[in-house]
Each structure stands twice: as structure tokens, then as C-alpha cells.
Length: 83
Image 1 (cartoon, rainbow, N blue to C red):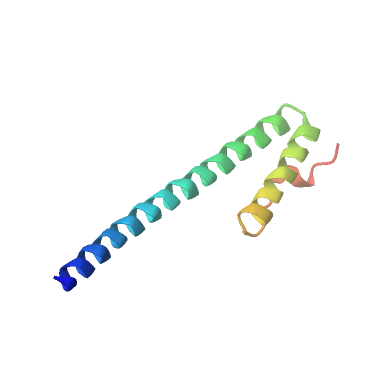
Image 2 (cartoon, rainbow, N blue to C red):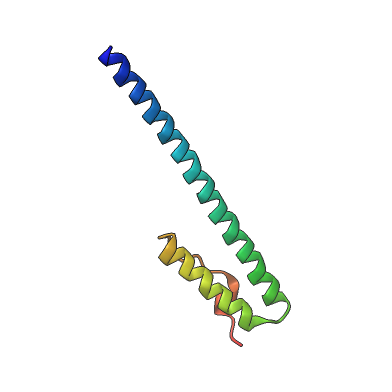
């Protein structure tokens, strides 16, 4: 009886771990999608000649990658843009 209870508990914990892992994967995908959208916005503003806005967004993107996602900075062309 005790072994069935432990097996049941282990099964429940494994299911919960799978659900948490799936949720983590969804959040990771959402953050990657948001960065891609931000990249598009940076390119759009740069192409429209609004280089100041593009530069600010690039700096925000850099902060997000380094400080919030613990990833290395990934430069985009507008980071070197001068106003």
C-alpha cells in the first residue's frame, strides 16, 4: 500500500514537473518573440530616419538581453547609429 502511495505521489510530481517545464518553454518562446518584434521596430524606425528612437530601443533591447535574460548582447545595426 505504501509503495502505491509513493508511486502515485511520484507520478503526480512528474506530471507537475512536466507542466512547469511546458510553461517555462512557453515563456521562453514569448520572450524570444517579443525580442524579434522589438528588432523589427528598431529596423522600422531606423529605416524611417528616426534614428534616435531606434537607438533608444536598441539600448533597451541590450538591457533586456543582458540584465533580464542573462544573455550576451547581440548587436543590431542601429546600435552604432549616430544622430
